[in-house]
Image 1: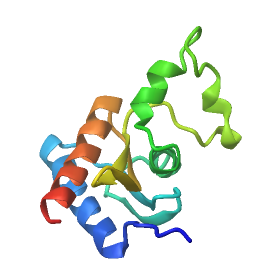
Image 2: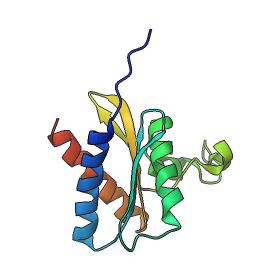
Image 3: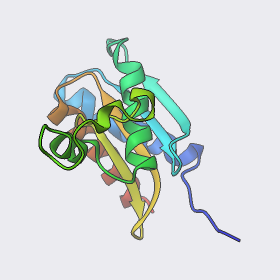
Length: 140
């Protein structure tokens, strides 16, 4: 028997609220997705002005971060020609994201979910995702 710790809807709302606040601070409306530890969507928000094309990207970033238990920017580095994971972006029907903005949510060293953010630059997306995680962890 396995006991699984995962984010719930209240946790997802906390992550989204903090990420949204950071997105407002930097002036970039974002799409923000939260998944459970297996990459299944719990909650999603597209801020007013968030790019419509970023909806799926944010969801897939959260999926990748949770299910693969790795930040999407780490895959970006590892997936370049000649690198060990070259071509991985085409895995899982193209859902595996290799652009920054997807982070696993860890509690006590265990992946409990993922956050994916899209609409800004990869650095902005990652910054907003990290702000969501930081606020969530502070309230635990």
